[in-house]
Image 1 (cartoon, rainbow, N blue to C red):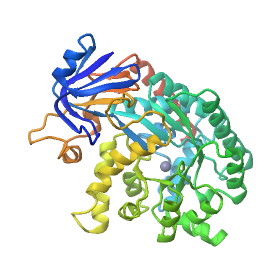
Image 2: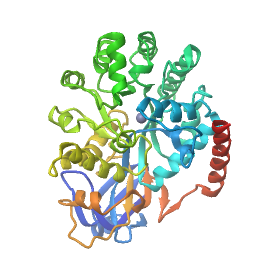
Image 3: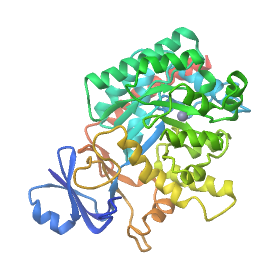
Length: 443
Ligand SMILES: [Zn+2]
């Protein structure tokens, strides 16, 4: 049993939102009690103390859409790569990279991503993986690293027709094998979805095969209408809009995540709402790829569950939060919109998305919830409480303020020191894998 104490406590629980001098008691993988610091110290005198040093104690972050496979791209310059549209970004950069990513590279990418998550206070991720060089076993490699480093993960493999029938069937099988694995050997920290790339790289035959193989075991995780090319391609081939096509194939539903949904119309939003399908917004990535601004304000008006991801552009959820607000205001040309939507995506809706996959509540500090707790180094020089916490998050904090990370009751980082993780050794392995990968890419 331990007590995270000596800090301002933000719980994200509407019944007890804030304690000026707060603490969280943890037993095993769950929170036993949250409350006033002194009361808890008296009640649990034998609990080990984790000192927040007067900083902010709060729920750990959830990233609702990311890509482990892109971890080794940092600093990479590809000869001749100069994209002029979204398709060229995918083909020249990401497909080029993942076609050369072997199992060793996937493993190194998982280490790199998970360490970044821990340092940024992220303890749950929904990942969408692709490594077309070595497909079989890739999700199991990631799961192995997730288990070692202690980050809660919902994984899937990106099925696509882009590399031919054989690779496509391997990708389908990887999803199937991994989903079966999470069902037959249940682990509260590991879940699976059925991953698919995007409608424009998936034939009807492949979509049908995915639905048949999944057979209702889990939800789908797919990019939809990220660029206008997805809409044009679907219209040209099927005389439908992408969301309509997925609806007709039985892919929408409460356990399915649609990534991006930038170019969706009113009728498509109605289908998303009708089926209670989840949407994940990735604002920084969208701006970087110059694909447009997701109609997040409209999703909220329609009461669609929309969460916040990073698309691996960053692992810092507060960076993504800042971008989410800025792009909505910029797009609407109105400086008074988007505040509640941006903060609700990160703090409320990501927790709701997490609840559709994981057993214990996450994104909240209350008795019975999973012990996913972070300490953020932050000593405000303006008034601070639950009433204005989001303003402090938006303008005062970033992910690297995180000094202590606890996931499922396990202390992964304490006072900026990774616990039980040989970072230097892991970094050396990552560096070796990235050098090998870069050599293959640039020849
Ligand atoms: Zn993505």
